[in-house]
Image 1 (cartoon, protein in one colour):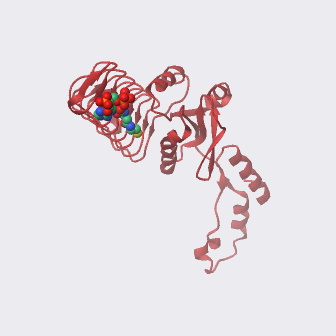
Image 2 (cartoon, rainbow, N blue to C red):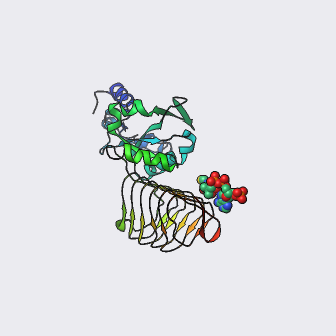
Image 3 (cartoon, rainbow, N blue to C red):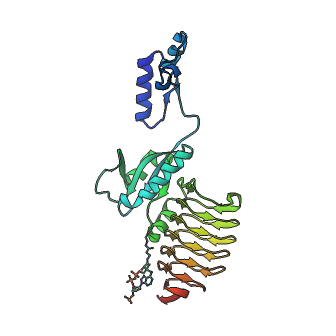
Length: 277
Ligand SMILES: CC(C)(COP(=O)(O)OP(=O)(O)OC[C@H]1O[C@@H](n2cnc3c(N)ncnc32)[C@H](O)[C@@H]1OP(=O)(O)O)[C@@H](O)C(=O)NCCC(=O)NCCS
Protein backbone atom coordinates (compact mmCIF):
# COMPACT_ATOMS: atom_id res chain seq x y z
CA UNK A 1 0.00 0.00 0.00
CA UNK A 2 1.33 3.43 -0.93
CA UNK A 3 0.95 6.70 0.96
CA UNK A 4 -1.37 8.38 -1.51
CA UNK A 5 -2.59 8.27 -5.13
CA UNK A 6 0.41 10.22 -6.48
CA UNK A 7 2.77 7.82 -4.74
CA UNK A 8 0.84 4.87 -6.16
CA UNK A 9 1.02 6.23 -9.69
CA UNK A 10 4.78 6.93 -9.39
CA UNK A 11 5.30 3.37 -8.13
CA UNK A 12 3.24 1.88 -10.98
CA UNK A 13 5.15 3.86 -13.59
CA UNK A 14 8.57 3.02 -12.13
CA UNK A 15 7.93 -0.73 -11.75
CA UNK A 16 6.33 -1.18 -15.17
CA UNK A 17 9.09 0.83 -16.84
CA UNK A 18 11.54 -1.61 -15.25
CA UNK A 19 9.75 -4.75 -16.40
CA UNK A 20 7.76 -5.57 -13.21
CA UNK A 21 4.09 -5.83 -14.10
CA UNK A 22 2.24 -4.11 -11.23
CA UNK A 23 -1.28 -2.70 -11.45
CA UNK A 24 -3.82 -0.77 -9.34
CA UNK A 25 -5.97 -3.01 -7.17
CA UNK A 26 -9.32 -2.21 -8.80
CA UNK A 27 -11.68 0.35 -10.23
CA UNK A 28 -14.68 0.73 -7.98
CA UNK A 29 -17.75 -0.80 -9.58
CA UNK A 30 -19.84 2.35 -9.21
CA UNK A 31 -17.37 4.03 -11.60
CA UNK A 32 -17.88 1.47 -14.36
CA UNK A 33 -19.96 2.73 -17.26
CA UNK A 34 -22.61 0.06 -16.93
CA UNK A 35 -23.28 1.02 -13.28
CA UNK A 36 -23.02 4.78 -13.76
CA UNK A 37 -26.77 5.30 -13.21
CA UNK A 38 -27.01 2.95 -10.21
CA UNK A 39 -27.31 4.16 -6.62
CA UNK A 40 -24.15 3.90 -4.49
CA UNK A 41 -23.60 4.22 -0.74
CA UNK A 42 -20.80 6.22 0.81
CA UNK A 43 -17.63 4.64 -0.54
CA UNK A 44 -14.97 6.88 1.05
CA UNK A 45 -13.12 3.94 2.57
CA UNK A 46 -13.17 1.99 -0.68
CA UNK A 47 -11.98 5.05 -2.57
CA UNK A 48 -9.17 5.51 -0.03
CA UNK A 49 -8.05 1.91 -0.69
CA UNK A 50 -8.37 2.20 -4.47
CA UNK A 51 -6.05 5.20 -4.40
CA UNK A 52 -3.29 3.37 -2.51
CA UNK A 53 -3.30 -0.40 -3.03
CA UNK A 54 -1.32 -2.04 -5.87
CA UNK A 55 -1.09 -5.64 -6.99
CA UNK A 56 2.41 -7.01 -7.46
CA UNK A 57 3.22 -10.25 -9.35
CA UNK A 58 3.01 -13.27 -7.05
CA UNK A 59 5.15 -15.57 -9.19
CA UNK A 60 8.41 -15.01 -11.04
CA UNK A 61 7.89 -13.91 -14.62
CA UNK A 62 10.85 -14.74 -16.79
CA UNK A 63 12.23 -12.43 -19.38
CA UNK A 64 12.36 -14.21 -22.69
CA UNK A 65 14.59 -13.35 -25.63
CA UNK A 66 14.32 -14.91 -29.07
CA UNK A 67 17.35 -15.91 -31.13
CA UNK A 68 17.15 -14.78 -34.70
CA UNK A 69 20.02 -14.82 -37.13
CA UNK A 70 18.21 -14.01 -40.31
CA UNK A 71 15.76 -11.18 -39.87
CA UNK A 72 13.63 -10.53 -36.82
CA UNK A 73 10.61 -10.76 -39.14
CA UNK A 74 11.44 -14.46 -39.61
CA UNK A 75 10.94 -14.93 -35.86
CA UNK A 76 7.49 -13.42 -35.66
CA UNK A 77 5.80 -16.78 -35.27
CA UNK A 78 7.79 -17.38 -32.07
CA UNK A 79 6.96 -13.89 -30.84
CA UNK A 80 3.27 -14.69 -31.25
CA UNK A 81 3.80 -18.06 -29.57
CA UNK A 82 5.02 -16.24 -26.45
CA UNK A 83 2.13 -13.82 -26.81
CA UNK A 84 -0.35 -16.72 -26.97
CA UNK A 85 1.26 -18.55 -24.03
CA UNK A 86 0.99 -15.36 -21.99
CA UNK A 87 -2.66 -15.10 -23.03
CA UNK A 88 -3.36 -18.44 -21.34
CA UNK A 89 -1.18 -17.74 -18.26
CA UNK A 90 1.23 -14.83 -18.01
CA UNK A 91 4.71 -16.39 -17.94
CA UNK A 92 7.13 -14.28 -19.95
CA UNK A 93 8.04 -10.68 -20.47
CA UNK A 94 9.40 -10.28 -23.96
CA UNK A 95 12.98 -8.98 -23.68
CA UNK A 96 13.76 -8.72 -27.39
CA UNK A 97 15.32 -10.46 -30.36
CA UNK A 98 18.98 -11.57 -30.31
CA UNK A 99 21.06 -11.21 -33.43
CA UNK A 100 24.73 -11.57 -34.29
CA UNK A 101 25.30 -8.13 -35.73
CA UNK A 102 21.96 -6.36 -35.66
CA UNK A 103 21.41 -3.85 -38.43
CA UNK A 104 19.07 -1.85 -36.20
CA UNK A 105 18.39 -1.68 -32.48
CA UNK A 106 14.65 -2.30 -32.59
CA UNK A 107 11.76 -3.53 -34.68
CA UNK A 108 8.12 -2.51 -34.42
CA UNK A 109 5.40 -5.13 -34.17
CA UNK A 110 2.08 -3.32 -34.25
CA UNK A 111 2.37 -0.68 -31.57
CA UNK A 112 5.22 -2.45 -29.74
CA UNK A 113 8.81 -1.35 -30.20
CA UNK A 114 10.87 -4.53 -29.67
CA UNK A 115 14.61 -4.32 -28.92
CA UNK A 116 17.09 -6.21 -31.09
CA UNK A 117 19.99 -7.22 -28.83
CA UNK A 118 23.54 -7.85 -29.94
CA UNK A 119 24.41 -11.46 -29.07
CA UNK A 120 27.89 -10.87 -27.67
CA UNK A 121 26.98 -7.78 -25.65
CA UNK A 122 23.90 -9.46 -24.23
CA UNK A 123 25.68 -12.63 -23.14
CA UNK A 124 28.37 -10.54 -21.44
CA UNK A 125 25.72 -8.77 -19.36
CA UNK A 126 24.13 -10.00 -16.10
CA UNK A 127 20.71 -9.88 -17.84
CA UNK A 128 21.56 -13.06 -19.75
CA UNK A 129 21.58 -15.24 -16.62
CA UNK A 130 18.19 -13.87 -15.61
CA UNK A 131 16.62 -14.53 -18.99
CA UNK A 132 15.05 -17.41 -20.84
CA UNK A 133 15.67 -18.06 -24.50
CA UNK A 134 13.69 -19.28 -27.44
CA UNK A 135 14.59 -20.25 -30.99
CA UNK A 136 13.56 -17.87 -33.68
CA UNK A 137 14.93 -19.51 -36.79
CA UNK A 138 14.89 -22.80 -38.66
CA UNK A 139 18.55 -23.18 -39.62
CA UNK A 140 19.71 -26.51 -38.22
CA UNK A 141 23.39 -25.51 -38.16
CA UNK A 142 22.64 -22.42 -36.12
CA UNK A 143 20.43 -24.43 -33.78
CA UNK A 144 23.34 -26.81 -33.31
CA UNK A 145 25.61 -23.90 -32.39
CA UNK A 146 23.08 -22.63 -29.83
CA UNK A 147 22.64 -26.14 -28.45
CA UNK A 148 26.35 -26.50 -27.85
CA UNK A 149 27.19 -22.96 -26.77
CA UNK A 150 24.22 -21.80 -24.72
CA UNK A 151 21.84 -24.62 -23.77
CA UNK A 152 24.12 -26.07 -21.03
CA UNK A 153 24.42 -22.78 -19.10
CA UNK A 154 21.19 -20.91 -19.75
CA UNK A 155 17.45 -21.32 -19.36
CA UNK A 156 15.77 -22.73 -22.48
CA UNK A 157 12.16 -23.55 -21.56
CA UNK A 158 10.06 -25.71 -23.84
CA UNK A 159 7.55 -23.32 -25.38
CA UNK A 160 4.33 -25.11 -26.21
CA UNK A 161 1.37 -23.32 -27.76
CA UNK A 162 -1.85 -23.52 -25.71
CA UNK A 163 -3.59 -25.22 -28.66
CA UNK A 164 -1.19 -28.21 -28.47
CA UNK A 165 -2.87 -31.58 -28.11
CA UNK A 166 -1.02 -34.62 -26.74
CA UNK A 167 -0.76 -36.86 -23.68
CA UNK A 168 1.81 -34.65 -21.99
CA UNK A 169 2.58 -36.92 -19.05
CA UNK A 170 4.13 -39.43 -21.47
CA UNK A 171 5.93 -36.94 -23.70
CA UNK A 172 9.50 -36.28 -22.49
CA UNK A 173 11.08 -33.12 -23.83
CA UNK A 174 14.65 -31.89 -23.31
CA UNK A 175 15.24 -28.15 -23.41
CA UNK A 176 14.31 -25.31 -25.71
CA UNK A 177 11.81 -27.08 -27.96
CA UNK A 178 9.31 -24.83 -29.71
CA UNK A 179 5.88 -26.25 -30.50
CA UNK A 180 3.76 -23.73 -32.38
CA UNK A 181 0.01 -23.61 -32.93
CA UNK A 182 -2.00 -26.64 -33.95
CA UNK A 183 0.55 -29.41 -33.32
CA UNK A 184 -0.81 -32.80 -32.30
CA UNK A 185 1.37 -35.47 -30.70
CA UNK A 186 -0.02 -38.65 -29.21
CA UNK A 187 1.88 -40.46 -26.42
CA UNK A 188 5.11 -42.20 -25.32
CA UNK A 189 7.36 -39.82 -27.19
CA UNK A 190 10.95 -38.78 -26.42
CA UNK A 191 12.24 -35.48 -27.77
CA UNK A 192 15.74 -33.98 -27.31
CA UNK A 193 16.72 -30.28 -27.36
CA UNK A 194 15.97 -27.33 -29.62
CA UNK A 195 13.56 -28.91 -32.06
CA UNK A 196 11.23 -26.58 -33.89
CA UNK A 197 7.75 -27.96 -34.61
CA UNK A 198 6.02 -25.55 -36.90
CA UNK A 199 2.28 -25.27 -37.22
CA UNK A 200 0.16 -28.40 -37.59
CA UNK A 201 2.98 -30.92 -37.22
CA UNK A 202 1.63 -34.29 -36.11
CA UNK A 203 3.72 -36.93 -34.32
CA UNK A 204 2.69 -40.52 -33.61
CA UNK A 205 3.25 -42.67 -30.52
CA UNK A 206 6.48 -44.40 -29.51
CA UNK A 207 8.67 -42.04 -31.50
CA UNK A 208 12.13 -40.74 -30.65
CA UNK A 209 13.51 -37.42 -31.90
CA UNK A 210 17.05 -36.10 -31.31
CA UNK A 211 18.22 -32.47 -31.27
CA UNK A 212 17.96 -29.43 -33.53
CA UNK A 213 15.46 -30.76 -36.08
CA UNK A 214 13.22 -28.35 -37.96
CA UNK A 215 9.72 -29.47 -38.94
CA UNK A 216 8.12 -27.01 -41.32
CA UNK A 217 4.33 -26.54 -41.30
CA UNK A 218 2.10 -29.56 -41.81
CA UNK A 219 4.74 -32.30 -41.42
CA UNK A 220 3.12 -35.65 -40.65
CA UNK A 221 5.23 -38.09 -38.61
CA UNK A 222 3.67 -41.51 -38.07
CA UNK A 223 4.18 -43.76 -35.06
CA UNK A 224 7.37 -45.49 -34.03
CA UNK A 225 9.73 -43.32 -36.03
CA UNK A 226 13.32 -42.55 -34.99
CA UNK A 227 14.93 -39.29 -36.05
CA UNK A 228 18.51 -38.19 -35.32
CA UNK A 229 19.79 -34.61 -35.21
CA UNK A 230 19.81 -31.50 -37.42
CA UNK A 231 17.33 -32.67 -40.07
CA UNK A 232 15.14 -30.29 -42.07
CA UNK A 233 11.63 -31.54 -42.88
CA UNK A 234 10.00 -29.55 -45.70
CA UNK A 235 6.46 -28.41 -45.40
CA UNK A 236 3.75 -31.09 -45.74
CA UNK A 237 6.12 -34.06 -46.00
CA UNK A 238 5.13 -37.39 -44.44
CA UNK A 239 7.25 -39.99 -42.71
CA UNK A 240 5.61 -43.39 -42.50
CA UNK A 241 5.53 -45.63 -39.44
CA UNK A 242 8.74 -47.14 -37.99
CA UNK A 243 11.02 -45.36 -40.46
CA UNK A 244 14.46 -44.41 -39.13
CA UNK A 245 16.09 -41.18 -40.27
CA UNK A 246 19.71 -40.39 -39.36
CA UNK A 247 21.19 -36.89 -39.06
CA UNK A 248 21.86 -33.86 -41.27
CA UNK A 249 19.28 -34.73 -43.94
CA UNK A 250 16.91 -32.51 -45.87
CA UNK A 251 13.48 -33.96 -46.64
CA UNK A 252 11.79 -31.99 -49.41
CA UNK A 253 8.48 -30.23 -49.12
CA UNK A 254 5.68 -32.69 -49.90
CA UNK A 255 7.97 -35.76 -49.86
CA UNK A 256 6.72 -39.15 -48.71
CA UNK A 257 9.37 -41.11 -46.79
CA UNK A 258 8.57 -44.81 -46.52
CA UNK A 259 12.02 -46.26 -45.95
CA UNK A 260 15.05 -45.51 -43.78
CA UNK A 261 17.39 -42.64 -44.61
CA UNK A 262 21.02 -42.50 -43.44
CA UNK A 263 22.91 -39.23 -43.01
CA UNK A 264 23.60 -36.21 -45.23
CA UNK A 265 20.91 -37.03 -47.84
CA UNK A 266 18.39 -34.91 -49.70
CA UNK A 267 15.14 -36.78 -50.13
CA UNK A 268 12.39 -35.42 -52.41
CA UNK A 269 9.26 -36.70 -54.10
CA UNK A 270 7.10 -39.75 -53.59
CA UNK A 271 8.27 -42.95 -51.92
CA UNK A 272 11.30 -41.21 -50.36
CA UNK A 273 13.96 -41.19 -53.02
CA UNK A 274 17.17 -40.30 -51.17
CA UNK A 275 18.91 -39.33 -54.31
CA UNK A 276 21.52 -36.68 -53.53
CA UNK A 277 24.43 -36.57 -51.12
C1 LIG B 1 14.52 -30.40 -50.65
C2 LIG B 1 15.15 -29.03 -50.60
C3 LIG B 1 15.79 -28.79 -49.23
C4 LIG B 1 16.21 -29.00 -51.70
O1 LIG B 1 16.75 -27.74 -51.79
P1 LIG B 1 18.01 -27.51 -52.81
O2 LIG B 1 19.11 -28.43 -52.42
O3 LIG B 1 18.28 -26.04 -52.79
O4 LIG B 1 17.45 -28.03 -54.17
P2 LIG B 1 17.12 -27.24 -55.52
O5 LIG B 1 16.09 -26.18 -55.25
O6 LIG B 1 18.41 -26.83 -56.15
O7 LIG B 1 16.45 -28.38 -56.40
C5 LIG B 1 17.16 -29.50 -56.88
C6 LIG B 1 16.20 -30.35 -57.68
O8 LIG B 1 15.25 -30.96 -56.77
C7 LIG B 1 13.92 -30.56 -57.14
N1 LIG B 1 13.21 -30.32 -55.88
C8 LIG B 1 13.55 -29.47 -54.90
N2 LIG B 1 12.67 -29.54 -53.90
C9 LIG B 1 11.76 -30.45 -54.26
C10 LIG B 1 10.62 -30.97 -53.62
N3 LIG B 1 10.25 -30.54 -52.41
N4 LIG B 1 9.91 -31.93 -54.25
C11 LIG B 1 10.28 -32.35 -55.50
N5 LIG B 1 11.37 -31.90 -56.14
C12 LIG B 1 12.09 -30.97 -55.53
C13 LIG B 1 14.09 -29.28 -57.93
O9 LIG B 1 13.01 -29.08 -58.82
C14 LIG B 1 15.38 -29.57 -58.69
O10 LIG B 1 15.10 -30.45 -59.74
P3 LIG B 1 15.83 -30.26 -61.19
O11 LIG B 1 17.29 -30.39 -60.90
O12 LIG B 1 15.25 -31.37 -61.99
O13 LIG B 1 15.44 -28.90 -61.63
C15 LIG B 1 14.12 -27.90 -50.83
O14 LIG B 1 13.69 -27.85 -52.15
C16 LIG B 1 12.87 -28.03 -49.96
O15 LIG B 1 11.89 -28.73 -50.25
N6 LIG B 1 12.92 -27.31 -48.79
C17 LIG B 1 11.83 -27.19 -47.87
C18 LIG B 1 11.14 -25.86 -48.08
C19 LIG B 1 10.00 -25.61 -47.14
O16 LIG B 1 9.55 -26.45 -46.40
N7 LIG B 1 9.52 -24.38 -47.13
C20 LIG B 1 8.50 -23.94 -46.21
C21 LIG B 1 9.10 -22.97 -45.24
S1 LIG B 1 7.99 -22.56 -43.99
